[in-house]
Length: 197
Length: 253
Image (cartoon, rainbow over all chains, first blue to last red; front, side, top):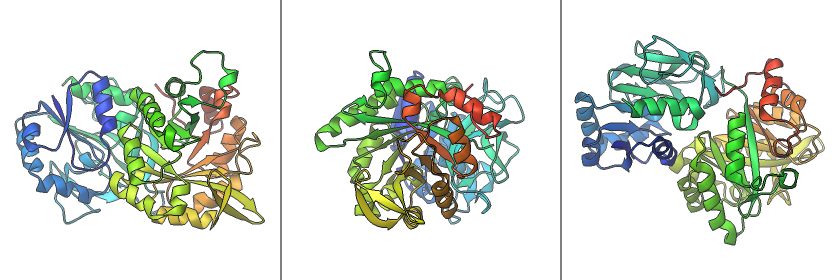
């Protein structure tokens, strides 16, 4: 069972629909007990970093960290990926999971923000389990105003007002800034790889 | 590199696509779910479904249409027409749309933009502006182009952005349905006035019009309906033309 964590950060219908299409068993839940007993965890989400306060305050953060320590595969999508970092300029008073050091920052003023649309993946470091079968240069759909810097764990970069992380991966931890549920076949391949872990 | 988006629009009435139906001889050619899937397979970057009648009686039909269309669609999907309240928007999101487009209701109560953006994120809120030239200015019209809103289109676009809109869907009423090309001047003025993406609409007749609106109009995306349904331009041919002209586009793998 894959838990899709609902913390009132936008609409989760599309994520559930894509995973269901791939034959996964899913549950949209905000119940920490349900998340704790799931085989895999997805934290989607759009909007302001301040929304992640709900995760911190509801007990979800603790069960998610315990699951991660038990090597349960974890996928953060968009805001969910940003939450995996230590912090974000968007709400500096809040703490992310700090699975990676670093801070999410706003796009520079010389490009339109949010970054909306299809942009290409610059696949790095090879050997990503999440991106298996995804060709370098594949286009995926982004919509975000803040971005994760390039990290040692970056498996795909993207270029918009400078380089940033489109995908990160380490052991059981996976994050994507783009929306795989909205990224056509490339996105479905990525979600299938996560389901098959 | 961020690509320019090509958006296929389906004008829907009572569960059927109403433009172009008579030109397609497939029995189910007017079915929105099938057309959306076909456009997606042909390389459309996004699908917009506009409920052109949006009467109260037909809302249930619309939601069912949205649900069926969204079911097997894995690219961004916008629904517009008749969204008047947060509850209308919530029902459409629940049926599987990723974004809603609002027009008349935003004029009636501009706080609706902020309200929907706060609940679903700015990326989920497109403000549609129907603009028409009046001398050197562009006026925003409402109620499907039947009433003057009293607002200047450029000022209204800026206000929509400040209230939380994530994108502007800009239709030139002067060009709509003519096939004479997008209004590049209008598109550029609005695109340079706001920091959010602008989708150009109205007037697409051929591939060269898309080249113009991306180059001269500074559009981030361009939307067309009838030229895709009529088969005058296939999306894959269009993208090849854009690519040859040096405009970045996505080719699905």
